View 1 (cartoon, rainbow, N blue to C red):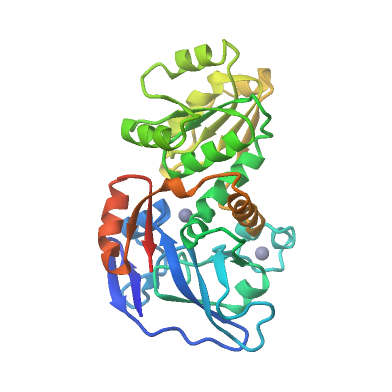
View 2: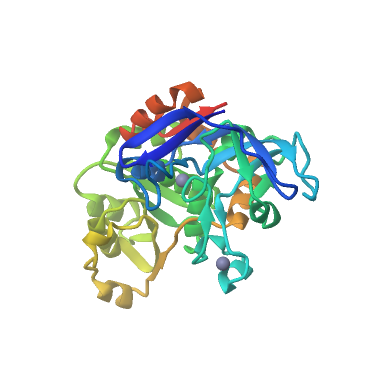
Length: 345
Ligand SMILES: [Zn+2]
Ligand SMILES: [Zn+2]
């Protein structure tokens, strides 16, 4: 089979590898669609711990497929079933795993991060992933491509859930990439008014084209614009979907009393600590929250939202490629051309 392997910093190759063997308690998934994420680009550029010439890794943590082979001890799943994959596999034993937060497990493993992932024609689904619910049968009406991009939307849902969104809330998203897009879709579903801001006018325009309900602002007086847009009240919700310390500091003065802020994007460690005016949090009684990755429950909710037509995520896909064209896809994604780049098998 063909697979895309990472061999070290700046070194990805499309190579021929053996189709994985499976045990009686494992599954073999034939990949139908796999999406490129910013994490893949960072792993390509910077390399990843444990990955080198002798220990290459198949990338790809956003993917879906059809079960090609089911081990005879595997319950429920049958050959021919279509499924999406939630990439984070927890230890299953710690308190966070028991609470359903596999993505916060200290010993978590993830497809395409520290075990072989979805940029391959076939993926082995190990027994732990089968038994902990990482494989999610597709509800009716959900396409393979939509299933592949549920992971970033599920991460957005994790942040969204911390913001106690109410209809009519004024919400700002800084960062108009796939994550900002996902947040916009969810906030709109919940009845919030959505404003997006980004340094890239092109990305803002792309969002506006597909999500006509949003406001976009591209200029150097965000505060003035926000105050006018909210009739002088300030924001109820702010989501920072970018890795920029100044943005985290800049949203606090824009908040209304009781506002909720989600620091969605992590900040590179070398730029910490970030200077924040915590008196704003104090006097305006703000809720400052963070979120990272997503749980299986978040992913299943997104599949349900898509299946019921509550959100449209397929409009996020701007580029499609065959596996032979995957290096080109990585180049385009690294240049931040369009929005989501999906490999269709
Ligand atoms: Zn991702
Ligand atoms: Zn655990």
